[in-house]
Length: 415
Length: 115
Image (cartoon, rainbow over the protein chains, first blue to last red):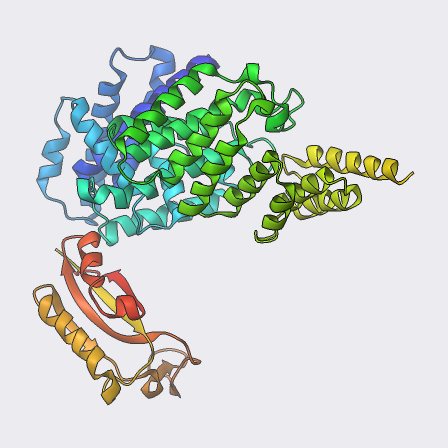
């Protein structure tokens, strides 16, 4: 029964996004459309586990959501709060379900509205999770490490802004896409990153953010198949996802790349990721963007059978480009690690000084110092890495082990 | 159609000072070019001329006025344009042509239209 209930809930969540996308266009109001879809979903959740899922769940939900929208509009009119012309109501009494083409356009409208540049980045992420993934405010709060009250407030303010400031519900013109797509891609990428590296332990809610991010990336790529950036984002997520089974061991500890069991890597995902990356690179005339470069780095790792077989010169070359087009401390640290892997440890140590301090920088410096047999200092750096990271940092045990190892080596070399 | 108030935040200058003439001319050019969308506008004297009015308690209570409200700030409210536009994207396109957008910042706020 529970499993059946979950399957029903999943169908409703996926179909709900499509229905919501079209309903927002019809009624011209995000809040009203969401309320109507919500009521339809509740009706389905009440009925389907008993009656079974109807043969055409989408049609059932669509018609029910329209009816609920009409009810809500009538209630508003009865209270005299809102004036509304009859056109919406006529549109809502239709029996037909929209064709796939229409729904696809509506989904794109919804994506670009949720990720509109006039909304703050955290608001875009919260809106995407609410309207595109169908998560509840409590679930969103769980994955974004905030409170349900704060999430609800953020969503309410976002809907008010969309309505009051008239953020248009439309797909940007072809010429505007290069300007508007980065915001959309950044939302999808940050969802995946949040799921991939939960800041504190296991997610409190049963939501797989990585899977949600991949679903959105697949959706965006299927809606805009010739755009190179969404293709590269999907490639990057699939190539990263391919390594996920090897990233954590049975006891839940993070396994670093050099120690991962590569037979656990998902070769199907790697194959698809590489194909998508090539497709994306062929379609872009300009210099490679940050997603293409990160995907290329992931593909380079995925290509080789062992850590020792890694072509570090190629990886350094890709990181050089990445740091140029999209500088970030994370990319610069990864570049330093790759430079050390070529054997240029002294240069790597020097470059570290130019990167802003962070817990990860201490950990990297510790590893590099150890390669120069400076074990005392290495152990101190690892201790600093532990001190500056939250106590539930996923690499905590790994770093403790490394610190102890360096202390032992320091003692050994002293005697 | 919707209306937006575009508030300009720039250096707190005296617009009538001779050294502001060139910049003021840029604003005039904007006003002429977007005459169709600009429904009203105003340029303000510097914040040093401002008076803050508060009524203590309720309506009819003692009127308390204070001189210029703010500590020296880098950017101050120096004027506004009332812009008519189809949606936020159009309003932003117009606001991006106001000289304050590159000399300072323009805050675009939707206006509540009474029914």
